[in-house]
Image: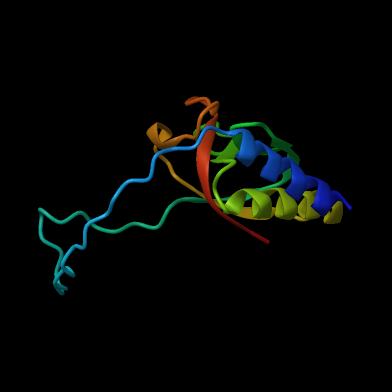
Length: 133
């Protein structure tokens, strides 16, 4: 029942959010692969992960967030996504399941606060990229 309710809340919030205009994408030629990274080419790093003991999951009109009992080294306790993102329903479902089962979740997040969704404070919130058990 709670999964249906969470899905309905996220769907309603996404429908109420203002639509953004579609941007056109142009075809880009495939990049050539190089064995050694050059100084001009930034190295690809994995996003940071955090083992979160879920305190609560909240659905707002513009975002969905998870709050953890434990803070990251940078003091982050909230991890959020826009309600228009497909991961929003999965975020609520997995967070509520983890709370019910008493299990932590593993959260991959964007370390840069400039990527935060609306309503997500720069001091204690980051954009969630993935959530797993």
